[in-house]
Image 1 (tube, rainbow, N blue to C red):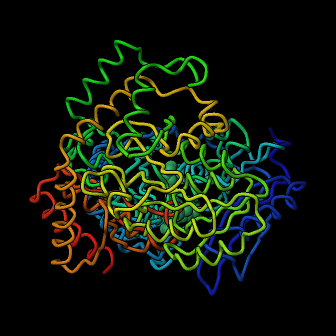
Image 2 (cartoon, helix red, strand yellow):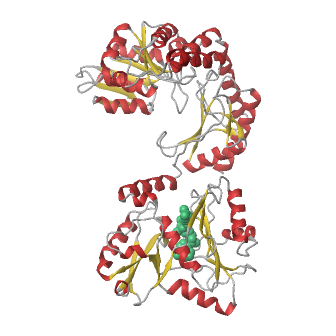
Image 3 (cartoon, protein in one colour):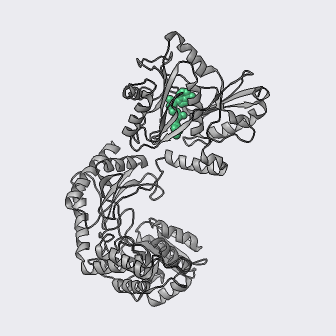
Length: 639
Ligand code: WAQ
Ligand code: MG
């Protein structure tokens, strides 16, 4: 042990721009590793997401022969769901250390805002004890003892750093506890620590978007001895042993690199998670025990829970099995599959149809089968991700024309005379903006250039046209060569399809790899889609009601100063900033409305939005209340 702790150096890095702190870090390492660590820290300073520093200070200081070694606090994570829950847990935990005025202590974080160090408070009187209140007290000269072992130096790891800091602080004389809330507005996790409690991570300790945070060290003891405490925190080197290893870290640098990408997303307000809706698909849903009005589902006609549709699925499961057991071309075609393809062709008024497992696969399947190397694709700038991916996969030359700009399409088609096959593809209803393609013009232009025309009617099926048959019905014109759609939106089931001529469909059956190499969708989903088509055909008033709902909602929004437009069932309210959109969505949820914030990479950066998707089953009262809540939320976050 003695040899190991000789010749140790502290290496500290601090980076700033125009006097503003960007990043900092410190290590305690043996002499032979000083150079390597200094260079790592310089790298870290230069690759910080906050931007490039104009000043980097790397300080190397020899440390005394004997460095104090202490055991890391034990770590416990408490999953809380709301700041209130987090706060009351913190209060409960700290009460055991005789700290009672937690509410008042938390309020002090508004004072600590721009401090580089921690606030030092008398645990009982809550008086501030630091000699320099602007700066606070900085715990420093500390490291994870495993940094000393060659080859185990950890990369950047917030958790380990916070545990090292908290451990040193709890070993300082007179300190009874620490409270830490991140100063990152989007990182809502914090912790409380004491010798007795160890390190108690609390997953939600503040409201998302709240910039207040920092560290508070709580002191109990004689005033004359505060200086000793500060001397320990700021001068005495400490190595912390047995810092718990994150599971990602244990798996090696490759996993830690994933964790760091995720952290970056989180810090940009771009991280995602799945919400669990504990109720049948419909215009309302139970989320975290509360009933919310769902304004984001693609189940436009409320058919997913329709008795005719669900009992068709149940019957098919009993009659044909839950899964199909094979690809369509081997053992996966059963009577419901053949029936659905006939139903779709008849519903759309085309010669034939082909069903895929998902809408994504229908786009990938059709596009990659039709065009490849030596061919050209003309694609609208705002087409759905599945079309973009299909274009890339196809190997064809891809030309992006300006969103809905038919003149630009025309011009770009003129430049594709040398290509073997040319395909122009557009969303029918654009999924993030709710605007629609001028299908007659699109057809006129593509025919003139003898290009294939393809339209993705995922959000048009069941929505556009008097009886929901899509854009051709809406405009009273022909179909495109390739009319793609999904079963998973207005048709309440799942899967994708292409309608077109018999020749086209035969071709796709033979050349479409996602069709050939995916297991066929199960009979329950397929039979449900057929039942939904029947229900829609017998009740076209559902489509009419959906249209009335959109008109009502737009009027209610306009009456509250929110301008939004839509020709479909999708109503975007653009907020701009990613975090503001997330905050608006959270505010709406608090008021009882489920409206997700749509952010990069789904839409371009800086055009984050609330995306409302309406159902024929919403009541006008629900829509009025939603418009009211939306107006309030948007005003709040864009102030
Ligand atoms: N000494 C005293 N106070 C400090 C120090 C230090 N060495 N470093 C930071 N602070 C204070 C300062 O006021 C910062 O603004 C604030 O703490 C936050 O520092 O998942 O984000 O380095 O286990 O930004 C909690 C980890 C992360 C929770 C806290 O730290 C978890 C965080 P940051
Ligand atoms: Mg921080």
